[in-house]
Length: 526
Image (cartoon, rainbow, N blue to C red; front, top):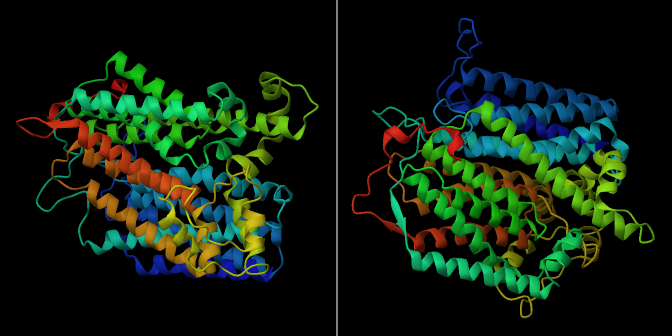
């Protein structure tokens, strides 16, 4: 109880500081927008800074209420209040990030959207039914998630404020609605090289793991199937990368995608899906949508939101259901049940429990780490950074960095199971709560630097813009999984995509920016 109260007090202090320190321009140093109602006069113009200020005040009130309820011993009420606080903070991050020119196509908005399925939904599930968390009360873990989000917003807003200008409005110029990108052609030789490398990578992976059918059947154990084969996965991803590069080159020329290219993109994503990782499906799709929105103009919310929800259902529920089926068969070896029957009879009944403990188990893992350290094991004091430095070495010759037995038993339960360890957990295991604060302040500041880079008025090479887009998307993947191996894979994806794009693209004689006439092509061109 004291731990939760102390955590809530820390959140309250952190949330009050940004509210008091950031003025009207600091909370939202961007343009305002007008809400309109179909068939009616416009509503009064609502400034985003005012909305951000209201959300910040709501977060501060929720933090204070949670602290008071924790002191009074109202544990269940504290859980609800912490979930409300996190909801207000996610909305605050979205308001701080949103601009009239780029709307949702911002790294901050994408982070806020990714936070919802990664942490917020699980927090509300535990608020409705705290008994679903099998490692103790949820309040301390949810409070840690809230604290991390406060620190992320503080680092993000502080760095944008430090520029002294609106990053979307260069001095003396109108804010550009689209990023300027240079027109390129693709080298046929390099395209064939990367396609060949990707096919070889997939071939080796499937040969070592019994083929794609065996891989799909054992998709619940994809972590153990791919462990030690990072270089082959990187080679296989070249197939996805080259398809992305070809699509982005088309958009840079102001052209829509051909049916053959759309089929190639879909085929590479489906092929990546056979590896069992939802990240390998979600990341390229989000990168393509963000790149399109930046280069060709905004994808309207009424078009993009249904597509976003449909994609989330397919990736989180669809692929997640397949993995849950594998876990169920392993846990019940004598039961014979087909995938479709499982989907209809078993799947819906334990959806909430499975979602919070499997599909998005970040809150659960944070609670597990807080129960383990420092009670049963001391903090690691930076060992994970050493593991990351050693990660490029092949697993056969890579030195082993020791892990305390209690942490090993809790976080690495078996060679078969592989947890996606969120950044809050990894930073806590290294330096306890100061590590969480520092890590998310740095991550928020780094995300703000990405925003500034994407707001530059210069004309980008497609490969440079692709690398910035990939970095913005990888922020969300690191939130969900920040172990040394996961960070190494994220870096491989960024560097690999940039390498494929840079070696393949050929600048034209006149590297002029995208014509303004093509800036507002319909989203149907996707």
